[in-house]
Amino acid sequence: MSAATMRSRTPDRLCAAAVDLAREVAVEAADPGSVGEHVAVVAEGDRVVTHFFECQDFGYRGWRWAVTVARASRAKYVTLDECVLLPGPDALLAPEWVPWSERLRPGDMGPGDLLPTDAEDLRLEPGYTGEDIPPPNSVVSHEMAELVEAEDAEVTDRTVVPARGSITAIAEELGMRRARVLSRYGLHSAADRWDEAYGAKTPMAQAAPASCVSCGFLVAIGGSLGQAFGVCANEFGPADGRLVSLSYGCGGHSEAAVMPKPPRPAPHVLDSMRSDEFQLRPSDDSGSVPTSDLPEQDLGHS
Image (tube, rainbow, N blue to C red; front, side, top):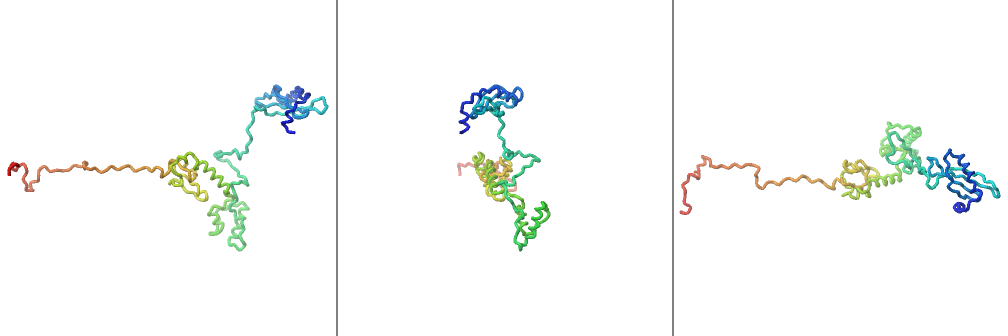
């Protein structure tokens, strides 16, 4: 029989009448003056009843003292079952507890804080540790054995330079000597997080004249993430110094609005910027006679 069916039963008459017994038990269990009025009686089962009293403690607003009483079959005396403090319908409750790993948000870490990672963190996977033993006839087998011994002894000597062309040297150059590296899940998780902040679906990108893939301020990055992300180097852009999706964009695109050169004035049709010299009278050594000294001629007669 379900709990809902049991609670719908009519309370036992003797158990329901034992209000004074239930109050005495609640007063004994609670602090002085914290037990209030009797508010309800609920049948929990056959000859089992719970009495509820208001809790007047300021720290437990809306809570109720619940005293459960019962009696045996054919018995005339009611006995105590339990007494607890339970939240009511309007009780003030603490928020549901959340583990610290789920409460942590970006930006919560400060100087000196340590953020441990789980050994089985899905975002990470084992990197190159040198534990793969090469064949006995391999030229790097002895070098690999020394590397394993150093790692087992927790000794990190970065002054030792691996032999050129060895597996250790290649791993050192590629940055693969870390104990753990990003897994495929870790890469996808980071890419989704960055794309949500600086991706094609953001309002800034939707209103941008062009995407970052064609912007001159985009700084390319290496690795597989370089196929979808880059670093913005526009100091006036909203994502300066941030990892942005190649499909992101803003109004600071290098080719969106190229500022035109200032116009050059057209050359003057008439040169009025300099003075021209004209002679009013010819020079004396030219042998010509001034016009004013010639006799007047009648232009109408031959």
